[in-house]
Structures are given as structure tokens and as C-alpha cells.
Image (tube, rainbow, N blue to C red; front, side, top):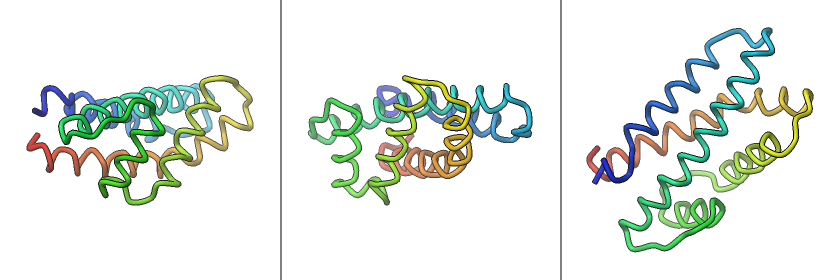
Length: 128
């Protein structure tokens, strides 16, 4: 079941985001790389959630639906935090303003922590 959910792939992506956050933010390339890795992680996270929910017999098709269903299943601690992540992802995906990027960059450690907690829960639940 873990192969179908790609939990190892998600774990690797989260590790890469952590890796980029370990570099000093004084370099613009670090901020850009971290935001790009965050975008990849949030996309992979919601798609993994969609598959995990399907295994449980729960249908969800959009990122927002997946987060809402995962929250209802008690897989997520704070729904508003996850909706904030989607908002940040949308902001970085559709426009690039340096001040917005820096604001989002400051929130990445908390976003990463939430995604890591979910990854751990899914690994335990699905015996990965």
C-alpha cells in the first residue's frame, strides 16, 4: 500500500525542502529554491492525501477537498494552517513579488513541520 501512496517519494521531497531551509536566507537563490521545493511538496502532499483518502473509501478531487476530508478524518491538526499553505502555494505559483516571496519563506519552517507530521501519520497508518 505504501508504494501506491508514494510515501517514500513524499519523504524525500520533504527532506529536500528541509535541506534548502538549512542554507542562509541571505542568498536570494536559497529563498527561490526553498519556495520551489515547497510548491513541489504541497502538490505531492495533496495528491498523496487524495490516494490515501481513496484507500479509506473517501472521495476528494481538489486540494481543498483533500485537506477538508483529511481534517475530518483527524489526519490534520489545524485545517486553517493547511488552507494557509494552499494560499501560499497559489501566491507563489501565479505571481512573483519579492516581498510576498520573503513573507512566504518565513512561514516555510512551520509548513514543513506540518507536512512532516502528516507524512509520519500516513507512514504509521499505512505501514510504510
